[in-house]
Image 1 (tube, rainbow, N blue to C red):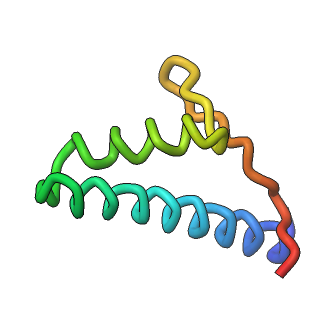
Image 2: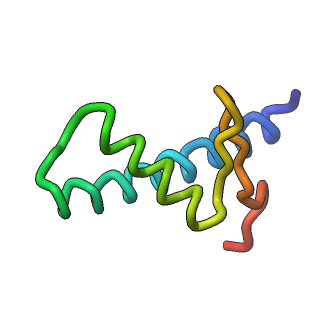
Image 3: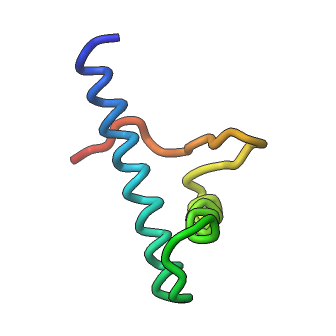
Amino acid sequence: MTLRDRLQELRTWWRRRRLLRAYSRVFTARTGKRVGFTPIMYAYEQAEQDGLLELDGEDVVWHWPETADD
């Protein structure tokens, strides 16, 4: 794996993490609950409803473009 590939993986991971944090913040704004298991589950549920990911048993399958036009 080249450094460029590793950086692209890291960038993709970071973008996905930011997206889930944004969904968690929506949950916090609506309910006032800040930390714990529930906000992240809400984030996964909302991302799944939006078609960005699929929960397959214990795995998360992202339907997110690996490369994005910036």
